[in-house]
Image (cartoon, rainbow, N blue to C red; front, side, top):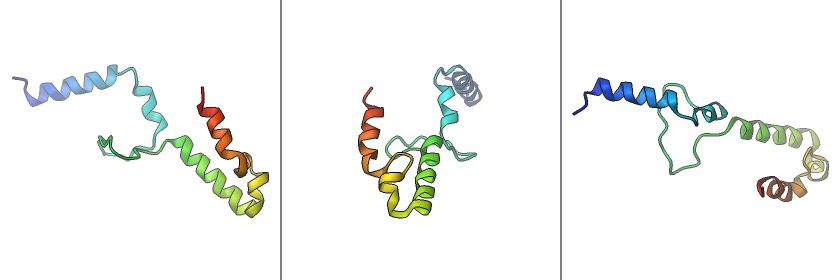
Amino acid sequence: MMRLEDMVDRARTMDMEDPLKVFRELFLIPQDVIYMDGNSLGLPPRESVEGVMRVLKEWENLGVDGWLKGEIPWFTMPEEMGRRMAP
């Protein structure tokens, strides 16, 4: 039977060797939290937060004109998202 200290050391080693660890930096992770809930929206990706803030700024500056004059016009945004996700 493994001691708790050995299990913690093994977990730390596995974390350091994890080939997916580079993706951790892409998300907003609260400090001092171990987030293990796989049954929710999950943690927000940094890029998504930036995108939402950009669109909110467009809404503030363009108002209703954002439908046709946004960086990605809101009217065609669903098609653009589909195009980007398709590959």
